Length: 108
Length: 124
Image (cartoon, rainbow over all chains, first blue to last red):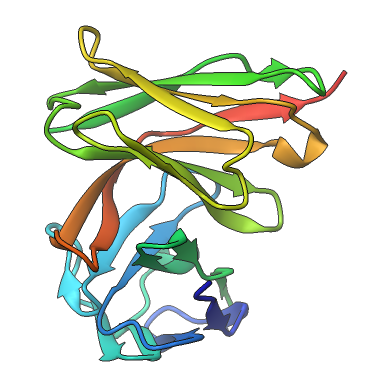
């Protein structure tokens, strides 16, 4: 099974900060990564798919990059609405979807 | 605009079967793939399985022995049954629509529309 490891697990930041979240895959997965934002226990919102494609309606301060085993989600200037938990996700034919363990972004 | 809504009992006794339904509006379950996912307290998101546009199903290897998914095209609904539940199955359960950037093997899937979720507690 392909495992996804996110870092850090917790991140404390201020409004206006540039924030980067990392996601490492246990084996190469091309650009088959999506990123989600979840506030409290509400439905996750899709932010990025295919590693770097911004979902329609998502603010451009969010960006994704990476390929193979290393992926990043960057928030260029953190806004009050961005304090949430972020998950990376991959899909493979044999075991289905896998999520990272999540990164909680908190207010400093 | 596609919307999804989960429904079902919020409390299930240990060893019994958890049953949930997802009602789709603004789209047809015959046109896409549809997943069930759950959020465990302290453990994050876990994919349970999906049902394809033709009714075929694929389940997470870790839950395959206990999961059954089905659909009712006349009601535009799909359902989840998880049997022999324990406290470890206490979670928020979500349904979602699957989308793909590569829609042939090897598939590249992600989930673009989610329901609001329903909390299921397993307790006697």
